Image 1 (tube, one colour):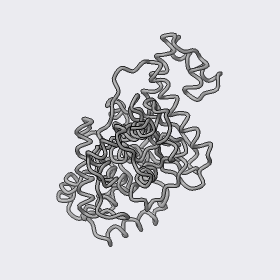
Image 2 (image 1 turned 90 degrees about the vertical axis):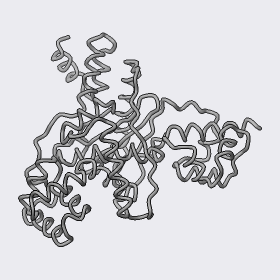
Image 3 (image 1 turned 120 degrees about the vertical axis):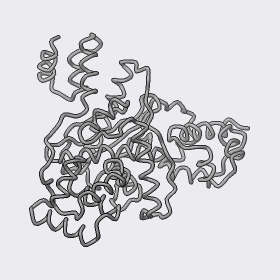
Image 4 (image 1 turned 90 degrees about the horizontal axis):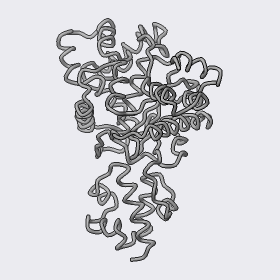
Amino acid sequence: MSDFAQIIGRNIEQLRESRGMSKKDLADLLGVTRQTLDNYLKGRQIIDSGKLALLAREFSKSMDFFLSATADRGASLLYRAERAADTPAEVIDLIIRRFELYAELLEVIQLKSVFHPPTYTVKLEGPVSLSESDQRMIEEIAGKTRRALGLDGVTGQDLFLALEDAGINILAFPTDPQAEVWAASAYSEESGAYIYVNDDDSISEERKIFSLIHELGHLVLHRHRYSYDNVELKYVSRRKDIYEKVADHFASSFLLPRHRLEQDVERLGDISPNSIFYLKQKYKVSFQAMVMALHNYQLISDHQRGRFFAFLNAGGYSKAEPHPLPYFEKGTRYRLLVQKLYQDGEIGVNKVAEYLDLPISEARRVVREWGV
């Protein structure tokens, strides 16, 4: 077959692998047999324009992506983020740059072992809402992910450290909350998975924890929706988006497993605001996240849910978190890697300033504290 068919096939195959998508799922998406798909991928048969357009829409790619002979994208980062419509472009560009600097840092230290989170394909019953069977399936995947990462019993701030220990690259730095970017994530075959969490002081620690696991949910369930193109972080995410609902339910069931809450409710009896405060302290989640989880699991009624939210509003907590967790440091692995490179003489103070996003004067103070 022509070189043209081989270029297209190679690019489709590379995209499939980078998104963690099985050949069966790709064949089902295109409505072809496995044998036909293999012919496409190996350049023995050229894919028709209609199916190529379907791939372009599904993976947020231009047609030029599939026609490009530049197929070596293994070290490139793929991106995803939840953001508001009017988020300034410079905020997104800053997050992208910090992802890229982390990837560069890992390349400098010549990382030998790269962790890739497990990935699952979810076939939902409906296009706009989650059915009960959808929810159960997501809960099962959340439990499997916890076990795969060795996180059973880990809660709250310890999840940041535990995910770093598992091999996920975490960045946490403040971004103006008015920009409404709570979290973002990226992925690379070469250097693994990345999660950014907005660490602004005005955002509750409980929300940051939820955002961390929300992005983990996207990495596990929506790898095929990440894009090589930086512009992917500039799309408008809506709270009604089914992918956001999936990631929200993943985070909720990861942080608040159904069977454990059922046991708690059975022991506590009637659920009151004091019960919610007790459970939120135990699981280190927000009051709102606890109420929503109890309602999703049908452990409280619609009326009770409304009563708890009215209680929050009456207390002036419509936007603030009652009895919040104290601030804790996050993303320490990144800073330690920068410190090690400096102490080993691999980088100078200027690069320290760039990696840590500090003025030179502040970077000099930091390296003096390192004792070098």
